[in-house]
Amino acid sequence: MDNYVPSIAIVGRPNVGKSSILNALVGEERTIVSPVSGTTRDAIDTEFVGPDGQKFELIDTAGIRRKAAVASSGSSTEALSVNQAFRAIRRSDGVTLVIEALACITEQDYKIAERIEKEGKGCVIVVNKWDTIPNKNQQTTTYYGQDVREKLRILDWAPIVYSTATSGFSVEKIMLLW
Ligand SMILES: Nc1nc2c(ncn2[C@@H]2O[C@H](COP(=O)(O)OP(=O)(O)OP(=O)(O)O)[C@@H](O)[C@H]2O)c(=O)[nH]1
Ligand SMILES: [Mg+2]
Image 1 (cartoon, rainbow, N blue to C red):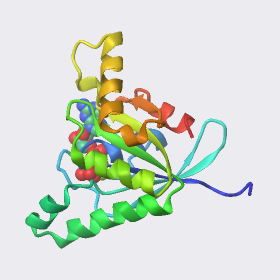
Image 2: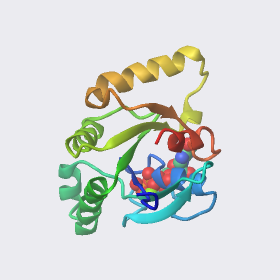
Image 3: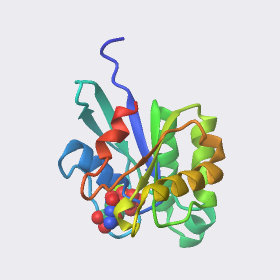
Image 4: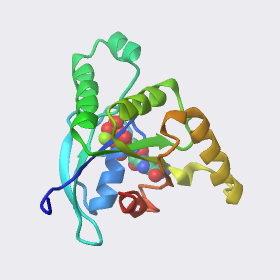
């Protein structure tokens, strides 16, 4: 199927830079970026053409918070957004799981990882906001890589990319891995 366009869902906790990554990839402000968590409410599809002409459908999704936190916020909009993000994982061919460099990997990230694994999707793990890590050296990447491997064991086969969406650093690497 030459015309088949694979879809890649960009998922992760709120505010990690999912929409920023999509904008950096397509080179324009396709989706709203803001410091407020929960900015993206709907899964938005955008076409992306790779350097070799390969087309992808990128799906920006709403940040996924803990179920209990969503329930206690009393926001049915957020609950719907979270369900949509899980649906995006289901309907996509692959998933870009975004984690924020300075934030710890939480149980919530693990739950999203479990979902990706359960749905049998391909995955690239992106450690974004790499610019916020001070005094980086060669060992920094090793250290972060080990932490990701330890805490997201279920995705031990997924490649890891360290990116800065706001400057575009390493963002194109994410798509080269598909
Ligand atoms: N320093 C730094 N800030 C970033 C980076 N990527 C995104 N941000 C900032 O982080 C904030 C959240 O970015 P978004 O792209 O809206 O994050 P999101 O994951 O789409 O957030 P929700 O849609 O709310 O889940 C914004 O203020 C961005 O400018 C990065 O690589 N480095
Ligand atoms: Mg967003």
